[in-house]
Amino acid sequence: MPPELPPPWPGFLQELGDLLDEPFEFQCVGGFAIVAAYGLPRSTNDLDYFSLIPNNRQRHLERLAGEASSLARRHKVHVHHAGIASVPENYGERLTELFPRRFKNIRLMVLDPYDLVLSKLSRNVERDREDVKYLARTQNLDPDVLRQRYEQELKPYLIGPPDRHDRTLEFWIEAYFANLGH
Image (cartoon, rainbow, N blue to C red; front, side, top):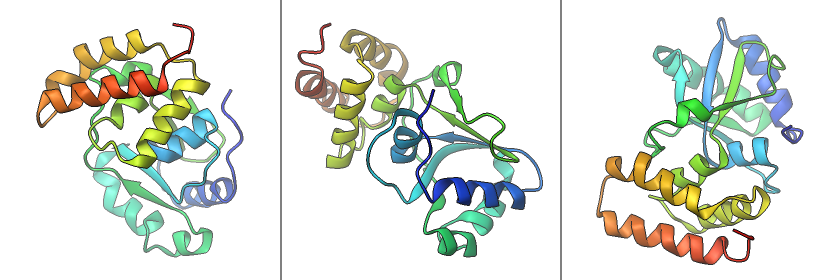
C-alpha cells in the first residue's frame, strides 16, 4: 500500500484529471515515484514521467500541466517529461499502479524499486545517490537481484563506457546495501 500523497499533489492531480478529455497513463520515475510509491520523506515539485499513453498528447499535457501552465502556477508543482530515461528492458512487466481510480482520467504507474534504482545509474548525482540509499534500506533490496537485472536488462542498452556504470553500481552496492542481511 503506497503512502498518502503529500499536498499539493492530490489537488493538482484532481484538477488535472478533470481537465483531461481522455485517460492518460503516466509511467513515473524520479523523486515523485519514490515519494508517491515508497514514502521518501522529501518534497518534489515535478511529476517526472518517461512514457505517456497516449504519447501523441504530450504537447497538450504540457499546456495543461507543464511548468508554465496556470495549473502549475496555482499548485506550485507540474508534470515533466523525462525524455531520456535508462530503464531495464522488462520494466513494463513490473509496473505498479498507484491510487487506482482515485483520479479521473489519470493512471500513475511506477517502476519497482530495483528498476527505479537502475534508472538513476547513468546520472548519479547526489540526490540520486540519496534516493538509492533510501530505497535500498526501506525496501530491503537484494544486491544480487539488482546486479542481475543490471547485467541482463540494462547494461546492454546503456550509452557510454560500460566500466563507468559497472563501477557506479558496485560503489552503490558497497555503500548502500552493506549490512542489509543479504
